[in-house]
Length: 296
Image (tube, rainbow, N blue to C red; front, side, top):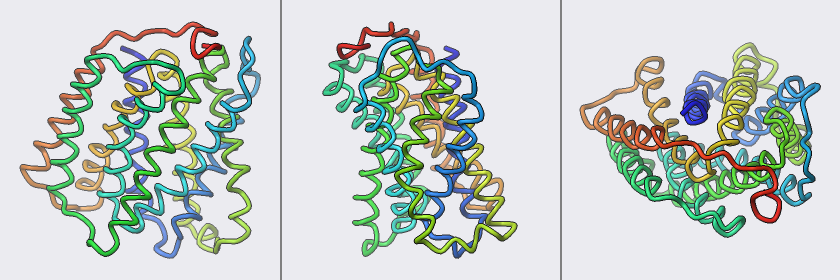
């Protein structure tokens, strides 16, 4: 139960991303925001990882590289999808596709089949997310196609990150060390963009505040909580639990951005909450180091 609560807490932190971006400088490009977020987050995660264990079992290099690449790709595709199709559609398609994609990739990667309650909880949560989306409108048809494709790419990127991170954690690596190295790899991959993209916005008070918030709360703090929970929860279940993010984003939008809400909005929120509650009440299954995929 504690593991799932930690993942729900991480999803709450994730849900502040859109609000923080909306309150930040308008001129900040999506790629620049995503890159600054992962670089700042990686630096903070390395501070948390000082003195933490690297694990007792060797982890294949491909797991580290794929996890880092998945996180780097997520930053690029997610923020670009939100820019093209809007916060609501981009977020919902990315997160809504993530559970199914994570379940499929985890099955291919490690042979772990999703459990029965996961299907019920995921379908329930997705129905709620769809209702939530319909209550807030959608992006224009001219821009949503590429945006939706990028959002699906973000869902796949997240799935790769989650599955490979699970293998790393199953080796016995501390969740602090695992996230620090994964985000460090992702940050190295994206850091060159900081010298190409316009970054003047980050020197303004609003820009600096946005970048620090995104690096600290929905990245460093959120992914430490997420990794803690992932040690005891399967990646596909973790992906379903993170569907709490659009609910959080909706609440912040109503409370802080004065976005309009309706009865349909709250029905969607309630259905998502029901699906997440079904999954959160399921017993956690600890994974022995070395028991998966030839290692774990």
